[in-house]
Image 1 (cartoon, rainbow, N blue to C red):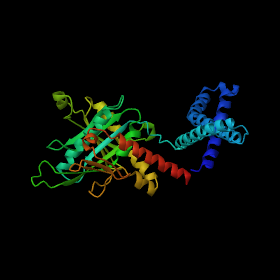
Image 2: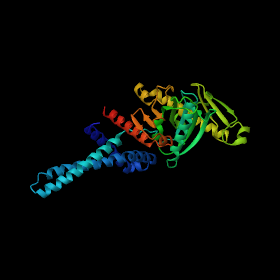
Image 3: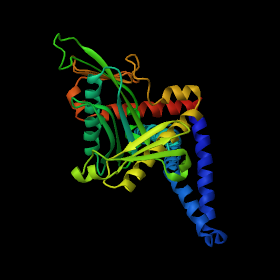
Image 4: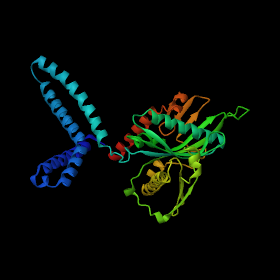
Length: 361
């Protein structure tokens, strides 16, 4: 995005901000509380951009004045102007970068809680074990965030401590903005504990990170849902075994299946299962609406074949590589303990840069 185009856009934003300010002070508007609330919300969303733009314009004016002072006959004034000019130019550059960031469209889903689905792909038991390790990774990551919490929704275990599938929710401010980059195929390369010859095996696990969806955003006709209940093997011991508290839902138009047995009551499991179903259907609809290019870029889960991957965890070489941005960490144990902020922040910067490029074009 060139500077001139950015300034034109900011002029429009400032005009809208000033108009909203005028409308909020209009006696005619003052009697309409709904309108006042709407204008206040819109104005608040523009405020940071407009205030930064004002600071930027002030820096430009200062640079112009300093350049004029450079032609003064007094050498002391010229020296002072030169020092001031450098400070102002540094400030202009910083403010310009900040404005570019503020103009990047925000993903309205970024602040939402998420539902994470982890499934073993190619690799048999070894894939299931790595699925369990990724589950632990994301749980540890969530535990390290202020006021985040996790809740198991459903699990399908293997006999040796792994998962064929595990579904859980993470609730917390900005959960989707941080974890959305984890969606895709994760590949692990290591010698399985059951491998006597010491050969390195390659296995895959698929991860899907879905933002929670409000009921008003996607309407599900319960006539299209086949609901069955069964005895849960989840938390609750004998009480859970005696009552059909677990839920299995099948959305007949698409064949989507959701199970939930993590809660103690049938009602709670129904509500949680509906949340998962809504998120899956919403994401499926969103994927249909994006362009082929966007769909390829944002595709959440591949087939789980070994050739598909977003990230590789190479245990013999103590290496984790994110193939989308070519970033490598040589501290695999820390990553497996949930230390993935460097990857997340680099991926977020890459997305931001791409969006700026798209705006510019």
